[in-house]
Length: 158
Length: 248
Ligand SMILES: Cc1cc2nc3c(=O)[nH]c(=O)nc-3n(C[C@H](O)[C@H](O)[C@H](O)COP(=O)(O)O)c2cc1C
Image 1 (cartoon, each protein chain N blue to C red):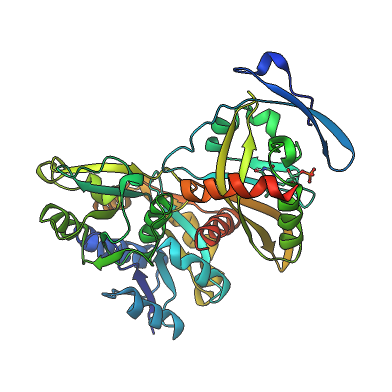
Image 2: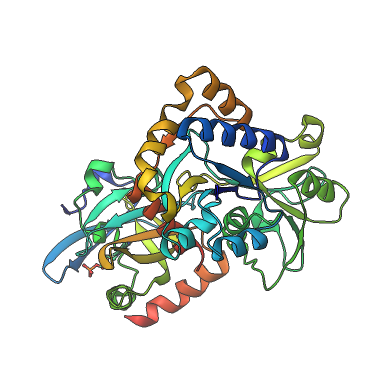
């Protein structure tokens, strides 16, 4: 489940906002300016069901997100949704994978402690016996040049 | 006609005799005639697979998708505790200390191993390097990759981590690791083709129990690992999905 973020989990000075997730629940978001660098050599992997509920995470995912595995499993993937990410990006993600096509993009993700980390994500539909049964996202370390481009571009997409 | 067995051409030459011992062991255990054919390039092996001349294969993770999806292969087992990981290294004298110091135009020494190359290129991507702005020099072994780094013929080497670790200390002392992948879900696997599919469970059981017998144990030693572990279909599908995401 997704809960409001808690002041006691924050590290550093934080700002507050509210985000509508799943077009229904509103989540209190607390976020800071502290970036966690992408861990060198690792892939951050998660799988969701067809509704975007997390069903599997790897160790690198747990480490970078700041949540425990138990907190992540059965939560909507928007538990990582950062207020600086334009919703158009996620609409594009879902429109693409719903067509059975992989989606690739740069994503700023929100940590449990209010900090953030950038990734280059590739989301693909998992096809078993000809049917889409789930989705998997594999993230790799993004190039700084590409991240800088997104830092300029994303605010224009709101 | 004996069944045809082959090993991904990236295996270390030290293990070639191990694969022949393994083939002998497998024939005895299964009572089937199996011929071990080795190919000296991925291309030659691929052509044999396309002609349906392969029934059993110790497959490079890069080929798993094609084997499962186009050729109806199924996973049997993988080496316990062995995953395919890549290392990016430079000469110890190089002024480069991290991947992001690397600049377009550099020459990269690699082998033909497609999975290692793919993992290596993913790690270089964070420095805005891609096939479009680097030169690759392909060598026949990781020893030669190391040699070319030390001689200054290449700026960076991409190694299979296991092969890097096996280099002589005197060589490793002259090299510097910039990054080592920690992916852990990508591995070689022994896979079985449609012609042997009805014997899959039997062969899988034999392999999983291989380390328990004295003979099996010594054959495994010559292959360089302690035991086989079973690969479930879903584990293989998941690895293929991960490989698919890395290919784009
Ligand atoms: C496999 C998969 C992985 C995803 N990973 C992320 C992620 O890392 N961060 C994120 O904000 N959204 C991710 N999403 C998108 C979320 O499901 C969600 O659409 C997004 O956070 C926006 O929230 P909303 O759809 O409730 O508006 C992922 C979706 C899928 C299918």
